[in-house]
Length: 145
Length: 431
Image (cartoon, rainbow over all chains, first blue to last red; front, side, top):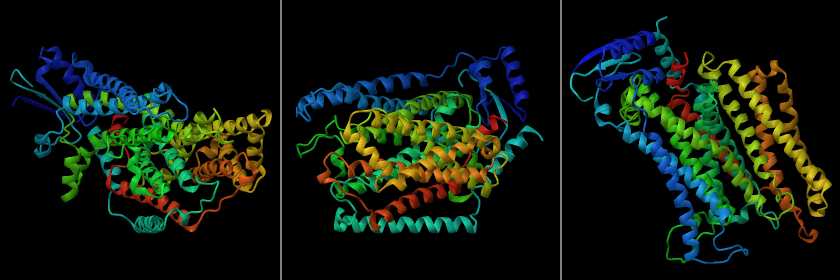
């Protein structure tokens, strides 16, 4: 267990965090707990852009591909002409592909968030550690966070 | 007052809404639950005896149930508009409404999803609409708007539910701090062990942004797909290209009205004046006014297209809509959706919550009537005078419809006492 500093004020907390970084404490050793998202933290502790974006991209793209593949391939293997329309009717299939793009994209982004944030965390659920509305800076001793 | 105390006050004020329910609340719950029971019994009666107990007669085979479906899907839209679109535009006043609006979206879609099943008659075969390999040698027709509905509404419900839950995730961690007993355990599990670390907030910010971005096109797409249930057919009064934007604007109008209907009493009974201010109501009233103007424009265009076109069937459909046997409903619709909201040009009225509540109730009525008028008048009076007919709802349909309102308001009442009604962390962020 390393150093732990608790602040009641947002500005004081940010000032202390900036000082720590200026002093040369590596960002990987600093852990911050806040009652709400503080965008400045991301600026002070740089080099940590969220990879949730990739999950969004891959999910959405796979939704589009699935939507078209699913409608086209199943229509081809059950070639029933309805209302004189072509077996592979792209305009209506776009609607299905669009819906699946959003669906897969949203679900994959959520899954990515859970994975990257390491949630659900059994330790977090069991632990009674609670800082309420305070801003906390934890500086860990070890090499790893 | 120190920051921590200010934050703690926000926690207490918002979580106080989840305290012991008063008599008024219990009475509301009893009334809505009774409506649900009545609706359920009537649905069981309809399943037992067949769709003949509904007022369907040839040629009107879509009526109140489909009206309710379109109405409730429409109500859902404003929730997404407020939570996703206003988030992307960084409109701060959204924090006063977004939780209630997101809950409204999820509940409205749950209610809407029941109506295709109720309308189906043989509700237990609804799974025919879901494409999966089966021994019946049946496959869905992807060219059918009814199948698009399954995908559009299914996606909409799933994404809205995820968005609703994600928004509450940090708030569950706050709620568990103040709760006791079984509630504490439930909130703890729902918070997934959220601690508020920089890593969690960083990914959370990105997740919320992307969910908002994914949900935003749904505001336009879902009701467009619903409108194509009608517009893809050739029935006069339905077969028109303006249906998609017309329905989307109507959906946002009705949804915004429902948000006002829900939030005005919420603010009064839960003492949330500090967090939901008159300025916030004024902003939401502007959305109501703006969408009402779009809807009015669509009404004018619809009648205009019919009157200067050379299609006699279309002309007759709109003459019948305005002057036929359902004329009072059409006039009431125009009064509620187009004329009453015009009064919101007056700033004083936009800031008067009692007046806003009255306007929102009238718009709700008007928007329900709009769907009824579009569906029933078009079917009752299509191409061939020989098959013209009419429609009168039966007590079964009216009861099931009232049951749907009961279900929606019951779910909402349960929500306000069990989940944080405002976004605690976002309000703290903006303090």
